[in-house]
Length: 189
Image 1 (cartoon, rainbow, N blue to C red):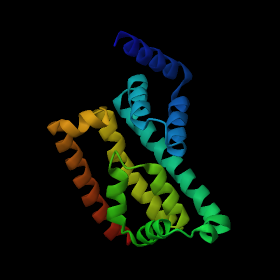
Image 2: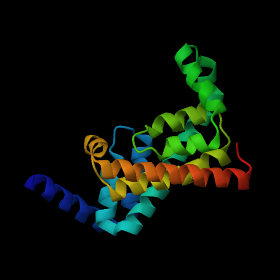
Image 3: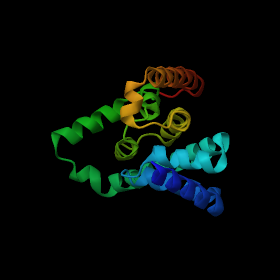
């Protein structure tokens, strides 16, 4: 436990020394490389730069990274992927993603355990509206990042702690209602 504490202190001090752009880069990389731990990067940003700044730069960076991934797969879809899709499972995912409404997309993005790379890739492949995707990212990711920033627990701990479950449920409900308001005001389906 002492070694872990020392590692966190070292990484936090390194991040503080390297600056906010290093914290942003970490989160962008996580959005593109799915094996990296977003919760850890958010916690490091919060430790290094404070709660508000840590959450804001993590939110901005994850939205940017997800959008970059979306753009890449949107481009690749037009050139290569759409012609190669033959399996029934992939076709089902594409069909579901094409018809997903804005509020459901926001809720899926807001869930802290949803693999973002799958959402980015499938939204890119179906060539979802940039506006719809960006607004859904902005709303959903702020709640997801806030969850990781304020809770900062592992998946197992989070699913067994009633307080964490209640906070997560409140965040998801808030994301849903905000998405409904934005959907009406911006006329997004």
